Length: 178
Picture (tube, rainbow, N blue to C red):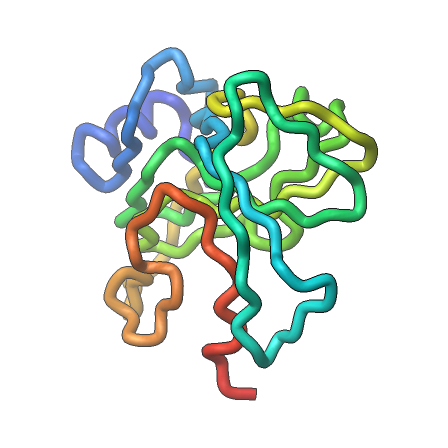
């Protein structure tokens, strides 16, 4: 089941959902709108290696915006820091963003119970498009969970994205054994 606006508000009151900064006007019927943070990043190398730590270059989006180009993977970040202690959060792109040819995630739309951080966005575009810091980019949807949870994300010893940040985080695939 997806939480309604009233249930999201109730969970915020309980402290099981945290959104900062929080703006009541961003609460939709069954979702909460999130915005593009101040920073973007691109990978340094043209060929990425899943077994190696691929370094990124982080830069600030200027006030006049920044033009995203097709064929480049950009890592962005949400302006909002979130915590989800009892529900499964899903991040989806806003339809207005999709209609500009912007995808905000390649595969990582689902969060885990216990995820406490900003969301790194895996941004790609189908044609050049100018984006701006603070623009609405996505919406968080919260699902209920049946049963007890044994492994909360923020207490897993092998969780790779627990360090609080306002900047995009590169892939940590290289930390996996394979």
